[in-house]
Amino acid sequence: MKIKPTNDLLFKKMMTTAGKEYILEDFIEAVTGMKLKNVRPANPYQIETYQKTIENLNPVMYSTIVDVAATTEDGMEIMIEMQLYQHKDFFERIFNYMATAYTQNYKAETAKPIISIVVTNFTVFPEFQEARIEIGLTNFAYYQEIRNRKQQPYWRIYLVNLTDKAIVNGESRDFSEWRDFLKNGTIKPKSSRGLKEAQKIVNFSNLAGEERRLAELMEKYEDVYYQVMKHQLEEGLEQGIEIGRQQGVALGEKRGMEKGVALGERKGQVMICFKMNLPIEEIQKHTGLSIEEIEAFRKEME
Image (cartoon, rainbow, N blue to C red; front, side, top):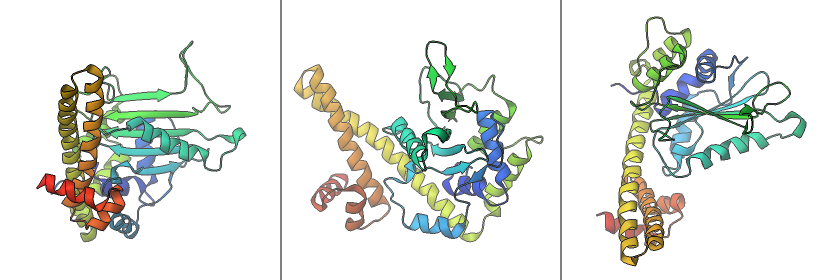
């Protein structure tokens, strides 16, 4: 069985295994172009810890958790997220994680740089099809990045686009090879040491029995999540447009669409939980809905 490196377990194992920090460093340098010293993951991979995380997983929210957090020798905070499917409040979530990291142990005179790398399987900006987009704190008058005394960026966001239509021309060889690896699991004969070791780690045949089970489980979670997101978009828009048409005015159509999308999202959350065979009490805890609302949604889905 072939599972891509974007699988939650494989990605965490690949990037945070103790003694393999050079893989994480290699990836970050390929994406950012920055030479970093002593990159260290905040939570090194341990199968026991990962297993407990999955057991306590909120199936509605699991896709929003930061996949990898790391620090460098000079105090830079780096976050890597795997957001393969488009969802609501994309940038709001990124900024929330960055703000949380920024305010931890905050001191004005030693504000630490925050770097966020987000890997997507969709195009964030339709007008820009580049495989890598860099966003920073910029002086619009001169289009210069604002940096601290050490000439480090205060914050940056790197969007890595894995879609087939993404434009790779002009990117570095290291970035292109890492992107191809995340997308297809393949590397070239002359790929970097980090990439070669990463491929060995994510090889399904090299996983222990429990790791295989959990990796396959996360594949199912991703599949359910994708189907639910697709369902939310289609059903939410259809219901919203219909409500708007009934009201017969442009404002009514806009509000109707918003109402329909919100309804689709709530149904989607319940669908995730039911597909994972969670009891009503657990669904209530994860979604905040009443038992009556959950039962009503279940009847509609039957």
